[in-house]
Length: 216
Image (cartoon, rainbow, N blue to C red; front, top):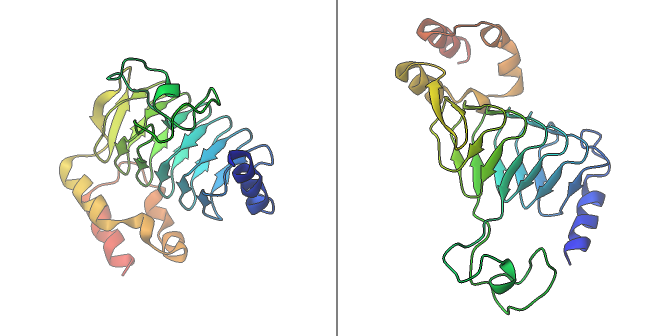
């Protein structure tokens, strides 16, 4: 059944030139037409928002990834968990479908996957590992090689093993205004009309006001 889902996924996306022919995608995943997937990426039971790119050899499972995200190569996002509260950590005792391909169970006794949610405009560096069920707020940055095991708020800069907040990209007031702005939900034409705001470093409160007025 799983192999059939992968075959259906290949056929479903075969004419999308923004998806590498070497990518493995199941037929349950949804990819926005403007998104891009690199070679040898793997995507299972997930959704990818508009203008998000996934670099080569990254594996994503049971995840919702928002718009305008940048995901580096060799990342692992939302991969399955193993129980540490049962006698054994082997999934053969708890899961119908497991890596061993043996079926000892008639039903699952442990939930391996929880939905991982990545907000909008999130930058994830290379070789980042994000645990299943984690939520990453919009505008966040995750440094290369980080291991993310818990939720992080919007516009946080995250790094380390295990990952922690290094600092925030902007002050609290500006973060609240950016979240209220929801620029990632604006039309493509509106964003293009206001692209000069995105070209400016050190974005500030007065820029937000101008952006709001010009985007009405």
